[in-house]
View 1 (cartoon, rainbow, N blue to C red):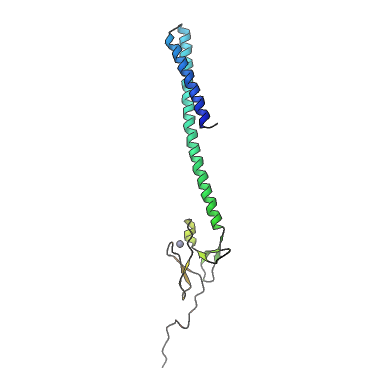
View 2 (view 1 turned 180 degrees about the vertical axis):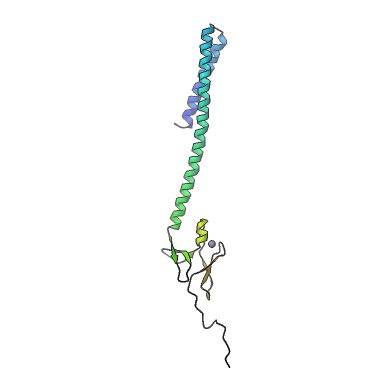
Length: 156
Ligand SMILES: [Zn+2]
């Protein structure tokens, strides 16, 4: 049953109610009038119930559409995230890394927010990679003191 069939039933009951109401105007025998009044009352109740059901069905369909959309977005995200795996880098950071193609890392904090931000090599010397999404830094490569960049001590 859908909203269309409920509307058809509702309209049918409305027509029946109108017909019974017309009989009522005839003012025939009091027993007949009492029966017609009872029938009109019952049809009215059925009409109200159908109206409430139609409203409820409409709300359920809206909710169903919303959930379908959420599920579809969730599946799309899962598919996107399936191209990455959680790894521990040589620098000690736990981040996501691509499983194929161009090798890069993405920020685990932003993944929680359902955002993908490739970490950028911000400082070659420290091995720290930064996330452009949240500005957090991750130790990706092992920190190695480069002889060329260390501060030299002048010996006498
Ligand atoms: Zn981030």
